[in-house]
Image (cartoon, rainbow, N blue to C red; front, side):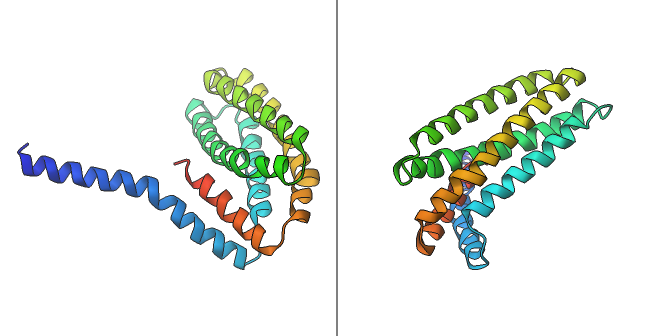
Length: 184
């Protein structure tokens, strides 16, 4: 490859890499603004994620006889979704719980539960070839996530919402979307 071809390749790759890392947050902020205009706030976004995870885990639990490729596909969807969701909660929502709502204990508990969820994901990835153990671990993870989500949605998220005006809700929605978009 000659020098000009190399420079063109390197420039194109750099632009592609930067666009892949920089555009998602800007696009997601636009989406968050549109969602806020339609009444969809950060609480709705995160609660929707919880339902998506429960649905994926139900599919995982019912995957008997579907093969490792099917289980791997479900696992990767769950892992990516949980990574984006956890990033938003850990970087935006839990600090607000601790600092604005004075719920330090709840925030610490949620961080710890995220650690347990990640431990389950690690085990699931290693068990994809062992159908029975994989399904049992998926069932355990579903119970953990549903209990975690219920406490967030019924207790702590409403506590935060009560402290925020409309502008603060929009700002938090933008931050949640931005953080979620960082996971490619």
